[in-house]
Image (cartoon, rainbow over all chains, first blue to last red; front, side, top):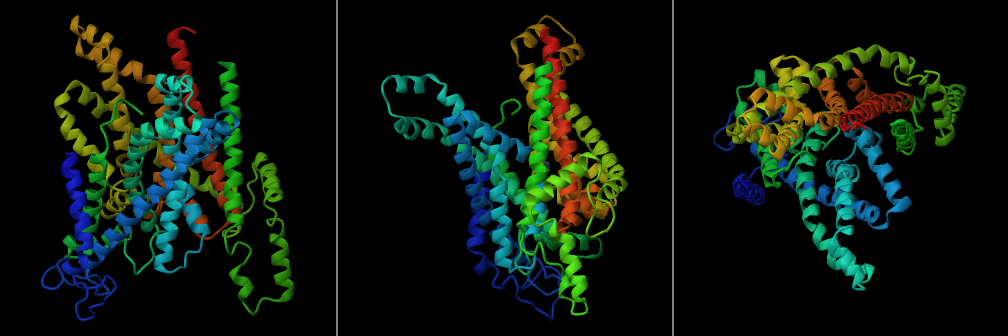
Amino acid sequence: MKRLAAGLLIALALAMVAGQFLVPARYDQQFRESTDALPGGDHPLGTDELGRDRAARLLAGARVSLLLAPAASVLAIALAAMLGLSAGWFGGWWDRVVTTLIDLMISVPIFLVLITARAVLPLNVSPISSVMITFLLLGLLGWAGSARVIRGACQTHLNSDYILRALASGSSRTRILLVHLLPNLWPVLRTQFILAVPGFILDEANLSLLGLGVAEPLPSLGSLLKELTHLPSSANWVGLAAPALLLAITVGAFEFLLPPKEGAS
Amino acid sequence: MRNALFRRILSSLATLALTGLAAATLLRVAPGFDVEASELDGRTSAETLRQMRAARAGEQDILSFYGRYLQGALRGDLGKSRSYEVPVMGLIRERLPVTLRLIALGLAGAWTLALLFALANVAWPGLNTGLNLLTAGMLSVPAGLVALLILIGQGPVALGLAIALFPKLFSYSRGLFQQNAGAGYALAARARGLSAGRYLGRYVVWPAGPALLAILGLSVNAAFGGAILLETICDLPGVGQLALQAALARDLPLLVGMTLFVGALTVSANAVTDLASLYLVRSRSGQ
């Protein structure tokens, strides 16, 4: 299942790269003579009410979500690693400060924090700025859960026999950090990264559905979902449902890349 | 136990105060915070402009604003909404029943389904693959999309919340039940001929009680997040919809009041379930 999921993600990445060759139309190019067209001919998924090619918009939307969600995850995991590692490493008052910060971030619904933070920033911005703001916010606010896990893992390793043995044999703290601790924490960081990517794709989708995500005319997988409201009155259900299907497949593929859960976490 | 209770209440209050301060600070530093569209209207007189600016002068210093705000909050006064021009507490009181009903129904549905499916999976391990696929599929759908589908299908909004919460609750519950079912004492009891019902009840579900209680608190938090989306998309006039409207209108008193209020509810729910979980653990171990 893991191989299938990885294969799907690689195929999706290739389709994104080859998107311009597969669908020559630009995501914002209007075909005014064929608005709301059904799939077929020049437009494999039809066109929207403004005459834009749905397939081109889907590929561009997938590109936005699939390039920037991992970037936001890198930011979130870097923050989580810095805070979690330093809390576990130094302990004492710094550990209490970080733990309080984590509790603060976890105790309030994260979506409430996200919409508040997004709404206080300018909403009337260029599409590129809206993409940057959305994913920066996701990265800056999405570190708490991972920081808690990394802090716990760091403390577990610091109390383990191999670190005690290294200390007893006279290894410096820098050497213990770089040679022993970080390599052993790598699998935890990698898992947290894979866990964060689908979460950020879903958060972006939810924000875009509320009009707080990626701004028009640039599409994202989330903003394309809004068009599902036309489903009852449209004959092009394939074109309307395609973004939802692609989103579910992408997020699902990331879910299957994760190691199996053991008990409750 | 008394010490644990005291520490938990203290930490909950500190978290709550920090939550409100963070929300107030965020809005205070937001670009355009102290500018109102009506100020740009050429017909507004200089006197009116002076009065409008004087009315907002108290909000300039974030700490003094927040100090006065907290004093009022302790008396049940969360200030006046700038966009609705009515008391914040009145707005919350008016919309709270809708949200509480949605959350109660959503949580009840999600927990019932999660526990039933988790138990069925432990009783019939052959369901594992099917349920894994179902959970992965449901986890791959954003709550906003669930809300859209509920809107299109004109289904009950609480069902949407239950669907959005179900997969994570199911995963946690199943993990706990499977851990308990695989424990040596449970396997020994089963091998000695204990009936399936007693085995599941006494050795699988009962030991999971404290952990499930702790997750219940966290699920209240998640339910509030889901309620914002469902209420907004399905046009349900609850607290979640009000939160989005407050954020979009940059209504500082309303947004800080909402954050404090929702924070108070979720922090209290977490504290109560944590303490109940602790009590359960201690009473079972006879301490």
